[in-house]
Image: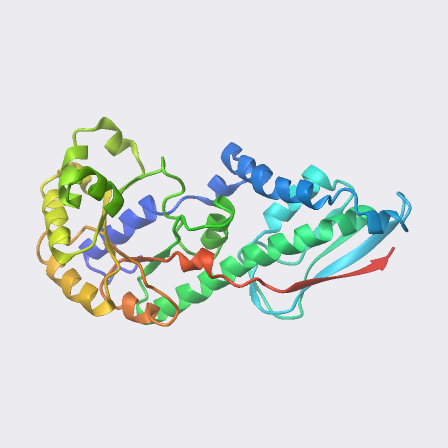
Length: 325
């Protein structure tokens, strides 16, 4: 970590890298939770597509016929989905053999061959669309996440980016973001405490009051982190007061300013830093896009969370070219 940063700044970044990041082993196929996600999402794609019985291939190729193919990228990007493709082969297409030219998280250029595969022809054609959809979707997420991270870092080298729970494929999307150097943030509702405006509205409490009410709950301090969302400067000030007066929240609490403009956020963050929030990580969320991410990165916030990392990502165009063995 950059030693030129203040102690408080280093403390905030260390907190976020501990609370908002998880090791890639969480997204391993050996993880029961991740394996269940793969079976529920990708396994269902195989069943719904009838990929094990491609009638067009079966009408011509004998069960012993073999073929070879290469998958070519039509645009540059960041690879994600290799692990998932290899899992699909082990689970559903065991006659195929994959050979990737890139690891997950590595970048590639247009017209590069990302992998070759060979095996039973009917399996190869049954696997084709599921393979391309998986790699195209996850690589699209990783590519967008990496591109936005680099733009943000060009404006503020210490800024962190985080994904949200606005995902299409759940933990698969989170893994793609992690491969691109983006923090995973909260993985599920039971992963961390996150006090949102809907909780406060239903309880008739302010964010600070809701946080104070939870301080008596033993489960509060067993979660990975405690994040408090605020909508106004006054709500932020009250939350900072609670955090500053509660030593147990140090290194666990994160303040999130929701739907603030860059200018409004910058003014408030400067105020909060000198009034109890010197070591409290501050997150910005809401309305952040490729058009304004540089401005948000320069507000003094520590982390930006973007739902568009996973909801607005492009599909990386890939094509499969086959030939007989």
